[in-house]
Amino acid sequence: MTKKTILIFDQAENAGGSIARAVDLANEMDEFNFIFITYHPLHELSNAQLATHITAKRVYSFYNYAKKIDHRLFLESKTKNTILRLIGKKIIALADLINEYSVFWQTLLKIWPTKIDLVQANGGIHILPYRLAQRTNASLIYYFRHLDDYRWAEGKMLNRASRFVFVGANLMKAHLALLQNLPREKCSVVHSPFDVATRMETEPQLDREILNRLKKSGKKIIVCNSRLGVTKGQHIIIDAIKQLSPSWPELVLVLVGSASENAEGLQYLERLKKTVTDYQLEDRVIFLSHRHDPLHILLYADIAVQAPTYFEALAGSLVESLQLGIPTVSADMGGSNEVLIDGSTGFLFPPGDHVALAEIIDRVLREPKLVEPIIEQGKAYALQKWSPQNISAQMRTIYTAAVSTK
Image (cartoon, rainbow, N blue to C red; front, side):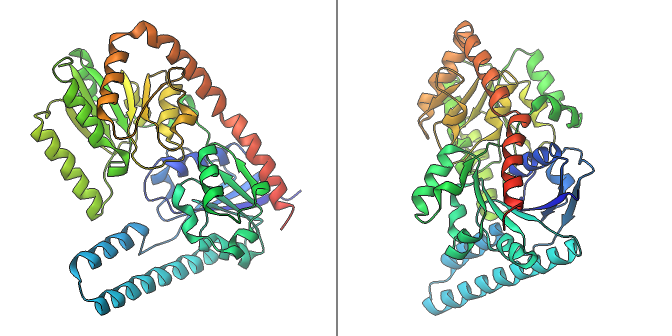
């Protein structure tokens, strides 16, 4: 019997996250052939070794979402004339449209003459996967991983889809409220798979001398493994470190991740560095930038912290730190309470509240005996709920049903 072919279109700009999880999931399902279409070489976005039933193809995008936002912000800040603003917006929209059609035709050339049975849009509703499904007469699945995926929604695109898959229950609930015509019977929650033991085998052995030195000197290490950005809330964690400084002089915050290469990202990075200098925390906050060995970095953590200020469907680093047996703390935002059950598998604090975060960190460090059962419960919960075997079984059922009905 000929294998069905699934095309996964992913606009990932950064390594890890949703694209890495998608590769892990595809690796588990060798009864299908997979073609990944990405804007960057797939080996730069995922450390996983590709199985033989997976093909990676790159297309070129000259006008991504970050550039579009930068240009809109520049237009708003530099142009007061209404007519010039209108012209500028039309130019931005035209560049975006030309880029979309360029990516569309590149993709068709890359996959010709392969028969595509299913197109999966990683990142929710987007016009390109819809057009690809139409052109190739394939089934269509929208995989929602972010809250703002609905902004491209059109009735014809929703009607064309065989299934809507959400990476978290809170995300699905939010989209059902936003998209009144989204058919509930076609919606499913399927979490991303996480298997830290397997992934650590593929992580490169990079220099970790600075972390070894911190451990040997008796430092208490807090790790935040996330892209640097105002919605990720690293400034809140730095405020908490400042508050804890008098009582915990051995506390060190390690920020693993880089800022986006746009004006907003670079401005936030400068803001963080200035805050660290103003607080005189230069030896207490360490910027490690992007790393290809984030799980090995997490192993040095006494506490793992996330502080999102904006709805996140599912912070994968929360699942990873739980599976590694690390006390895990997060702002109660988006899907974080699907991973962390406060006081049972981890700890939650109100978004933006650095005082509450500081109190939790202080309690975790002072009462290790009380935290031990929470660590064990969190590890067992994360290993079972996000196991690749469980999740691949759910997606296998969805794929099989989708490819059998156009």
